[in-house]
Length: 321
Image (cartoon, rainbow, N blue to C red; front, side):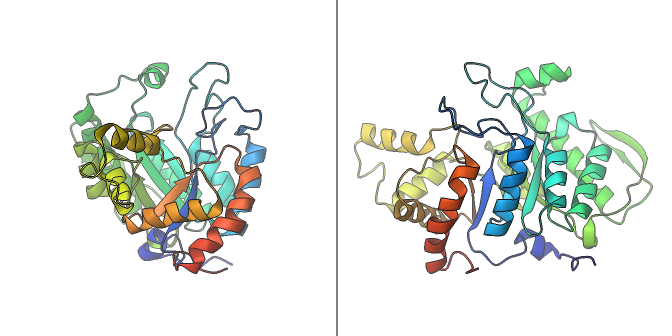
């Protein structure tokens, strides 16, 4: 028996009424997002990802968001050196979970849009409407060189991505046997069946930080993924009455840097009360979801779910389970 057809609103809300969505970020990569030598650092193996996906599903975690990485950074641990490709990773997890939304992170310049549209629709049917697309244009020159693909200038990256997502959305629509002619893509007789599960397309996310990237996200996406942008940091700090006006310049810079360190993330270190208060502050600053990374997801997620989530439930940011 198929699940009820999801509406656009269902998909955007990730099929629940949680005011602050909580997801897990980067588990498809070895070490996750923790640049560390500790022996318990994340393996990134499929076996551990499957255990984590099932654990997150049962615990009420809203989404799983992978990193689109193709080669590691070397060094003593080869940080993110072993990675699982994200659409196939998402497909496997969607087949073996029931509730959680699972994203694929897709480099538009590396995936033909017709192939990508078909792969994502397949994942979406397997997950009965729980697949999401995180579209990225790429920045790592070493990875592009590995593919033999020359990275475009910054604005041109988003021009290409606009044509790419236009084709994807048309394939997912009721259009059939259509042509597309743009600056970068020239395609004839395009057809794609089946359509996304239930007749509504997957939720789309983007993390563009530049003005061009932000404009792209606003035009095309349902969710805008922030990695601790300066504006967001200032809004969060202002909630704590820490501003450039009332704090010495060097002290303010140190505090902001502390918040923004860690591959663009926001480090939150402390007991459950502190962690919950930080997440509440993020919600007050206007964020509707947070993607969490942990040193070892399997070891640490049970404590997070047992201690932090109930605190968020008590202030009305999460549904009681």
